[in-house]
Image (cartoon, rainbow, N blue to C red):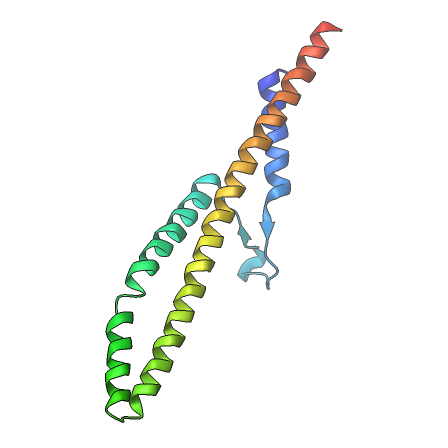
Length: 138
């Protein structure tokens, strides 16, 4: 078996083991559904999470200043709606911060996964290459 064939077989085995099978009811006709992601899919999801993170930081806060000023003005004039608006604005800010943090965590986690996978791939390639060299030197 050539090195290329050995490498392709090892890779196919690793990919088969890495496939993620979701717990679910069998589909019609006895078919099963698998969730399989490749590097491009993971990268696309990470990019979208980063883009959403960036947009939420700016677009999610575009009304913060105006809402705070309106709440202060209403409260100063004695309207109870001023306190309610301030509370709603504070809650909105809290939720936006939570979403921004979640998007950052998703983006960073996927970036780490891609990087980690690439390093593992290089390590495995080096091991297979050296094992083939050892075989010829023996």
